[in-house]
Length: 325
Image 1 (cartoon, helix red, strand yellow):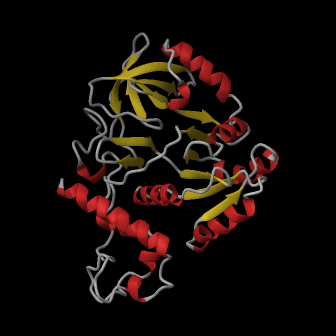
Image 2: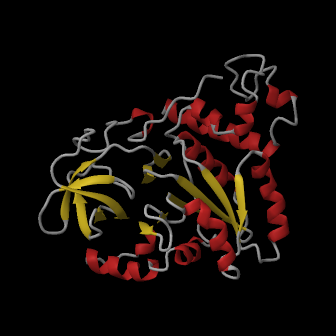
Image 3: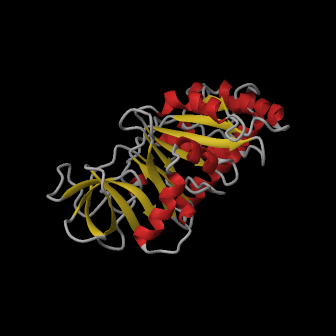
């Protein structure tokens, strides 16, 4: 198995430009320094260093700007023009055969939320974990709604991820909010954290618990952008009250699919802790872990669970077919 390739946070696999904007040099151009704190289609909110929040728009149709980006704005009247996106230290992506989407940039952690009801979606969890690994972003799994009757069965399912080395926290945001706050505060302190998860897992309740200003902020956003759009479909960054400076939470829309076409095969393999742990143990060094003779994942039933092996092979087929198209 080849050594994992290092992802480029500006653009996965070197597609199109590897720079985040038209002139993303390491030194900022003259203008207003800001951080993108809201992304609503082609409209954005940027927070200046003095705390003011202003509407802004990118220059050019192909400019890629996301929540968490550090930018330089042209002075003037809102909406201000985004003149420059500064280099990102990381970015979380998903991509399928139809489109590519960046969730957010410059992250310290991803909180990946699942729930006892409507049920744990292992395929989506697995894909998100791989994407975060490729971007070198730590992940903590949150199992929400642990006050429901399905909790025991869900806990048993989450043992898989604990055994793989992931941190798993159990929460009941609606019925035990203070316990949830106590569990999450050490993770959020001084960090920029992305809240990620499928629809219906309780992300909105979690956001409102951690950032009480979120509901009022949604109304203000609609007014600032003069738009009647549903702002729950947008990505928003909130400062976290009561925590040290630099503590921020990004809330992203729920998702039902998570393509990984932007990754290489070596990044895919590195995203499975089971495969990393058995690196070099197959008969052939370039084993793809599908049907080669002497593959450790075929000969040793303890090496990986059948469901995880099936997920790997599904993703391998998706990546290799995408390369051929």
